[in-house]
Image (cartoon, rainbow, N blue to C red; front, side, top):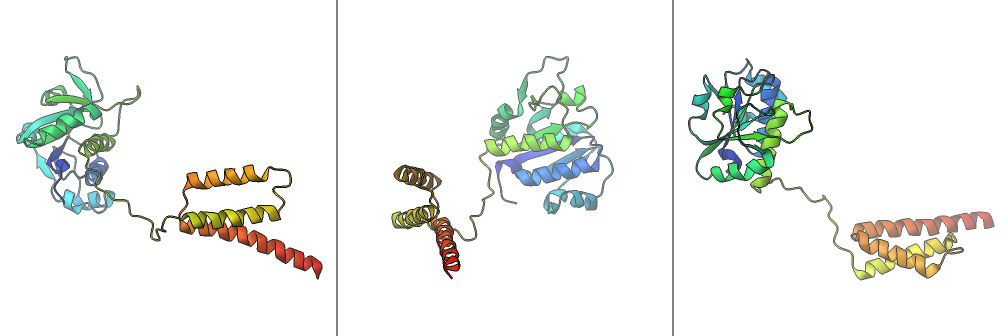
Amino acid sequence: MPESILTRVVVVLYEPQDPVNIGATVRAMKNMGATDLRLVRPCEYTEYRLAGIAHGTADVIERIEHFETLDEALADCVKVAAFTARRRAAKRALTDARAAAPIIRSATQEGKVALLFGREDSGLPNDAMDRGHLVVTISTTEHSSLNLAQAVLLALYELHVAAADATRIIRPPKRDAPAALAADYELMFDDVEKALDAVQFFKTRHHDRIMRSIRSLAFRASPDTREIALTRAMAIEVLRTIDRIKRGLAS
């Protein structure tokens, strides 16, 4: 897996209760470029089941580490971002995931950074929250309880964007046509004008204004040569159809 800021981020799940959430977390990590998942006293699961939930993630699954205590899981991290959906009695400074992303990104220059998430049913207990150097929330409506894997995905997404690490390149169309030339446009306008005239479209409309509107529409759309050829073919077929009908009526 290529080196990126996200490979320096460790996702830590504290006592996860559902293998599905572990698998979905693995998928989220693979999507966003994170490589290291640490589980503190997790539920029972098999790598086979995780692979069934998150296809194509064997490289992340085989790196999963188990820890008996949270302190062991966090020991080599220079910063810990603890995620919570609940406000606590203690006066902890809260920040949202988007604002926290540049802080976490900067900390990766010094070493590993942990994103810490709690149990599905109750989140992080206070003593686990105490390990957080910063406490992070994910902005929602008043219904603030997120699925565990969804929370991980949103946190990693904000980091992915903050790191300018959107590395997936969208492939161009298989048959990418070249840009249309001025001459191509004029041929199209000529064919469209002839087709409209053949169906008497200009009979009750101002000819020049209609054609100027069509030009304006085409220039805004900026069609390529393939699209212009398609438009010309439609106009020409209108003319041919009218001609066939006329010849049929005359015979």
